[in-house]
Image (cartoon, rainbow, N blue to C red):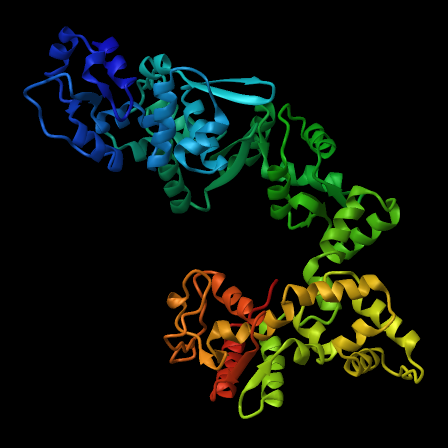
Length: 570
């Protein structure tokens, strides 16, 4: 019977035609509740709902399909703890393949990411259901159905109850009596071995005892390799417990803290690398190699500083330092000590110097959206005629450089300073620099975008400005309030209709759009097509913008909300 069950199980979740079974096998299976027979329509329904239960069949013809009941199917692989249908699809593909398959292909089968596939295989590997081989750096996996059927649950040795234990006495009092009579303490594993109760229940009893007699009983974390245990013992036996732990080769948290401080004795900080792990292990006298997680958790318990320096490609470097060390000390020391092409130096540059947002801010970009709004609203208000602003290429080219840099991010390091240097060399009446910031703002207000593009300055500087204008960065910035519904857009004097009426990249001129919320609540379109369609219209026609009559009230409300929702990053 076991072989027949295995055969049907290999048919997978969706089953196979009944013709794959002999008549004697079909007759044998009919009496079991875990078997199901489906017709073609029911099979289609099953593909949409894997837990679908088909009707019972009395007449078994050759057009039917046979499979194992899904509930029973799940019970056979209960150790895998699968919950999502994608996990079952991956398992099913491995099952019906019967041979090695590419691990990469499972991602498409289950329609999941690589991380999910790895998780499923990890669960199956823990239960020894998976075989793996690697050929030319490509991983192949196979489901071992035999081990799945022949598995044995993990068996613990039967508890040996000594004669002195009392019968019909609650387990709590037995544990209490044992703890008070032992000199070297007890762990949950000791209780499980002696009484056969679960570790969880044993720990609950010991914890209750420790709370009841907090002056008599203490608790200590000990480590057997990487396995953490909680040792409960009588306070008066502390010295005996310490000696016993050393004799057994167990390590306490204090041992780890002392070892870490010894590493930092002659150094201000250490890196969490393999060399440090070996030294840490040697000080502890342990045969087990610690990892980064162990080092960091120990440092936190010892109240030491932990720094995470993230470099290129999101590679992190973890440092543990004494309390008097600042991050700036580490950075400066490494930069001075290392050559310019050193990997650490590159990481520091990418972390603190070459971050795009920081470069843009240095080039006068207003990173906060509320600051950009202030500039845009004031710009529209001052330049509106008859309460309407007409946007055109000529109009934008006559805006000042400061207006451009405030609204458009430039990601070239020191771009503004280089441009000002070029402009200053061309000036006959040079501005006397009393304050550097005043000087920078003054010279950028003097020149328009058109002026700079016509001047004989560095072509690379011109090219960068042209690039920002070509992809309509400036127009996009000016239209940012459009996303919040604070302005009304007019194209060819006709208002644009609702976003839903924009079809095939063209504007429907038969309707009227008013894109703003009645309560002036922030409006976010579902996709990025909306603004792109508006921008595409500007290429063939000018754009008119009208401020909402209550825009000033909205700005005041927004600033109030920003103050309420402000926070401090620690």
